[in-house]
Image 1 (cartoon, helix red, strand yellow):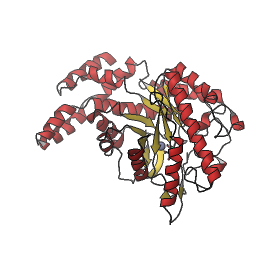
Image 2 (cartoon, helix red, strand yellow):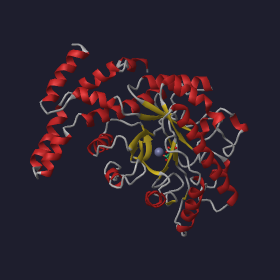
Image 3 (cartoon, rainbow, N blue to C red):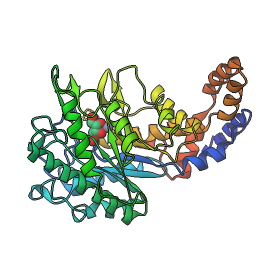
Image 4 (cartoon, helix red, strand yellow):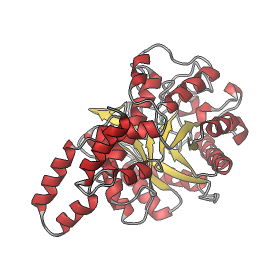
Length: 405
Ligand code: RNT
Ligand code: ZN
């Protein structure tokens, strides 16, 4: 049985439910997934290969093959990207500049990131960006943008400002908007008395960083909240409520939600519509928390499927920007990047193959029996055959690649 004849069978079966698989494949090809660059090297960065990861996040595991040089790093990233079919962006981080330790974070400039533009052009991908407010001596006491030490706060404000200019440079060079995501590790380990103080400082720092208007054609900023980190279990300055209010009041940036940054039974899929109701754009870090913010590789699990379904149901693929964020050092890092990217794409395809219109009509008519019955029956449709066709269309291996790892 060939991919094509299998696809024809699938096409017929989906058509019975009113689903046009050709249209779904066409739409899938237009939706970019932003692949984070840091699974390849456990978030070490190119700034300092001996650098230590701090900020309350951790890549555990010691699988071999971690890149030891800049060329090796890009070779591996390229290999991973080739295993992910369809449209992609790459999200890079400030510590992936090419100036070594001689240029501090408050001095970085677009010229230190030309290698990323070259790589993006070669791979035909867009770029997203992230300031690195961690893994640095000036973040060691646990506070950056919300620090009450003015020298430290200023240093990180300067970093944030410069990162937006790098985002703008990426956007201009590649002709597509760069989403620059600001995540800070700030918080306290134990019972916190002054919870308001650091948040007022953070507000001021963000106001300063976002003061300069940058054309949203080139750069849009997002702010990423968190519930807790290692060493900031009791209090995190940049909480979800803080950033939600910041975004709504200031209108100078958008929210970023990471699937691993909430209470264990709290899901981001159910939050999307509340932002979309107000016309807001959203940045996502699709990750997989296992009991805590563990940053396991994204898979085709219930929440990843629910996220993509929700975007489809809200018709918001142009408003919700899908990015990945995980780092697992216990398995091959190239394969880990590929597995996460492919799983996100699969989840998008599944969502596109949903008979949403019919489900909505049933719901609006009060026919909840039909809604549930239909939702359950479509789970048996041969989605894998459509996925195989997609990989084929994109010139991407379906499963042969697994043998190499
Ligand atoms: C940390 C945040 C953040 C980082 C990246 C590397 O908890 O999720 O997004 O993972 O900046
Ligand atoms: Zn994240």
